[in-house]
Amino acid sequence: MLLVSKVIILLIYAFTAAAVAGLLPPGPTQVLEIVTLVLMAAHAIEVVLAFKYVRRYRGPLAVSIALTLIFGLLHWRPLMRAPAADANQ
Image (spheres, rainbow, N blue to C red):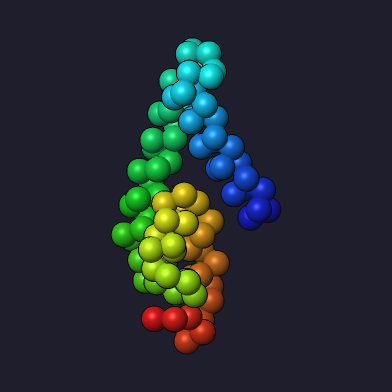
């Protein structure tokens, strides 16, 4: 289910990019652009609110922040469940 959710988010971003590039009809793309902006704003807020879990990512912090900006809780929620001792601080 996690993978399916990530694919859906990536599809939303891809369709929005296509809409901005003018590859889709202008009518429904306005709604898509608004949905994407709200989604990205929510993910930006998540970076701040869930930073203690975002830090638990085993890779670089910048990568974890980028993944949170893209996927939101789909990235940091599994990190929340992982013990803090196993993660790089």
